[in-house]
Length: 142
Ligand SMILES: [Zn+2]
Image (tube, rainbow, N blue to C red):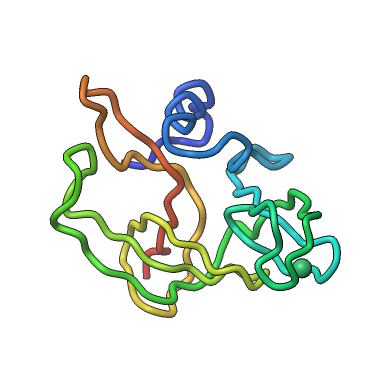
């Protein structure tokens, strides 16, 4: 069950467990977005943001919001993983409309080439039973 975007306090607390600080925030209308990076020299975009550009090795990569939707490039279903993850879980690569390929948890009616949108969802439980949330790309219902 996806965590509603208006559950700010809970969602942001849970996100802190799984994501680097500043990797996710909300846009001006409250929708979740990933914050990646853009190289100031060659404009290569990336998520997560790296301190050094993977294309030209420049050390000036600035924070940049990523596209909130993309196209499912590939996915798989994982049945064996550390105990905190809900299983089976589906993960894969999403090609964002700004050209960045992101590895992500996935939900919905998955099909390669499907349009997927960013959300926050419960992906596991901590050892004391608290839900763990992370960014999840969700396929539109067809
Ligand atoms: Zn660069």
